[in-house]
Each structure stands twice: as C-alpha cells, then as structure tokens.
Length: 178
Image (tube, rainbow, N blue to C red; front, side, top):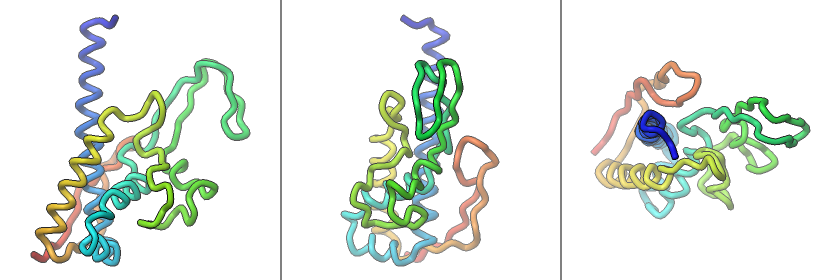
C-alpha cells in the first residue's frame, strides 16, 4: 500500500522519465542518421534494419547516463565488494562499451549478434516500464522520416542540454532533402 503523495511522486517520475527518454532517443536517432550517411543509405534500402539501428543508438547514447542504486545485501560486482547501505552509480555508457561484451564497442554497427544486449533501459527489476513504447514510437518516427526524405545531414555539431543525468539535445541543426 502506498500513500496518495507516494502515488503522485511515482506518476511524476513515470510520465517525466517516459517523455524525456523517448524524446532523447528520437533526437539521438536523428543525429546518428545524419552523422552516418552509409548507415542512412543502408536503412533506406532495408527498413527491416530499423530495430537494430534503434538498439545501437540506445547502446551508444542511452537517454539516461546513469542511475543510482542502494546496495541491499552484501555482494560483489567485478572485483569490488559492497555492503548493505552503500550507494552505487551505475554508468550505462561504461557498461554499454564493455569490450568483453561488445566487439569494437565504440563503433556503430548494425551487425551485432546480440543487438539488445545493452543496459540502455536498465535491467531486471529496474527495467524501464516504457521501453517497448519508446522503441515503437521511435521506430515509427524513423520509418516516416526515412520514407519522406532522400537525405538528412548535420549542419553543425549539436548542443547538448546541460545535465549530468539526461542525454538530450538542446539543439540539433539538420538539413533534409525531400
């Protein structure tokens, strides 16, 4: 059982995070389309690759950079021991570029074998409730953008919103050929 104030707090987080993560993901997808003309051409010739494209963008530019977690029981992560009550900052950027998991981890590739094997939307109990919807909305937007344009280019490097937590563009200046 939760209180009315707790329910309001949870709702604010759900709606705020949902809107923030989806808009950030869409912006990042447009950025990668414009920045990688060969990938853009590949997607134009095969829209079936959109799922892999979206997942690779999530891996390289997750909407949220990290999350904090409080340790509940003694555990070991890598070579570190943790005790109950300690706090962790889990960096999705770092996890998603782990060279033991992702071959050539800093490069963009539509050919990854386990393309959804990233931490961009969390994992387990803390997996993002809206991940499926964010992916779907983004894929529909991209499909329409690709179908209705012949080329998307960056006009200049984008400016990011000044946030330690969220990865979202403040501006993304592109040119589109119809």
